[in-house]
Amino acid sequence: MLNPAWLRSFKALAAEGTFTRAAESLELTQAAVSQHIRQLELQLGPLLIRRPRRVELTPAGQALLAYCDEVARADRCLATRLADANAMQGVVSVITPGSVGLSTYPRLLDIQRETPGLVIRHRFAPDDDVVTAVLDGRYELGIVSRLPDDERLAAESFCEEALELVVPKDAVVDDWEGLVRLGFIDHPDGQAMATRLLSRWYPGKRSIADVPVTGFTNQIALILEPVSRGLGFTVMPRHARRAFLRQDEVRVLQECVPVVDTLWLIHRAEWAMSARARHVVDELHRRLAAADRAAA
Image 1: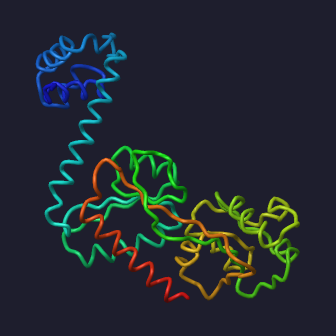
Image 2 (image 1 turned 90 degrees about the vertical axis):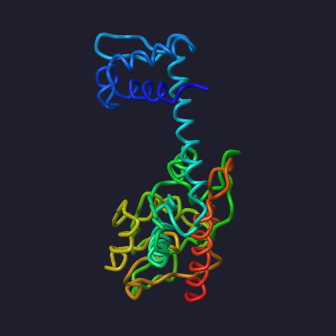
Image 3 (image 1 turned 45 degrees about the vertical axis):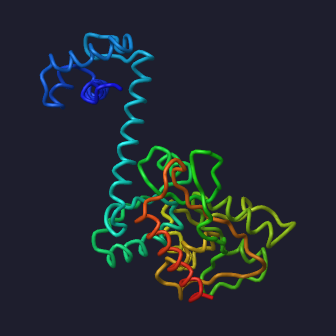
């Protein structure tokens, strides 16, 4: 096993680029850092190309740096497991897409408020970033809209999310032409979501690309602002629509069977979900189910 002090010096050198800055960051002498690197190179071969201004890693050095990251992830995993003696204390980190995040984050805060000692760390991100963050060990839990095909991830069904066509409360929309007259409020996923839903509702009609765009925002929490002011319609996930505070200013059209996606909860498959994370997930399931019953 490689000496942890040697690995810390190597990782600092890779990050800082020079022996002087690495030594300063570790509060060691430059001679100590040089000795650690020398010991590693005696065992592993050349790890560095020493340039005048900055060291460069050899392929062996790159492999050792990746190993250092793996050790750091294993240390975090061990700390999580050792902290599981009390399921009601510690950090639960969750990363989600915007729509379901708008619905779950307030409930996560409610759970934290009711559970002294529990700390919630949440981030909004698209599906690909969610998967990467969970694989890298930066977040314990993630929610994605596509079931990941990666054996390193464990996945379970979390909830369902329907796409909805939302119009201003007083809008008269009897057919496809009514939507065209109203105009489309677009967002980053708007075209894809509208195509999936409207192709089922209005088969044989032209595509959403033929509907005039009367607004755009990349903030999911603000998509219904222009809709509520009569500036157009949009297609968005139900969780995002329910998070809008002024529900009386918009209306959901229900023309036919909705398009419904399954959202998946993911975590690293190599180790069990922490007890406190399991508690949070179970509480979220319960509260989301209660919200669905109340809205029915």
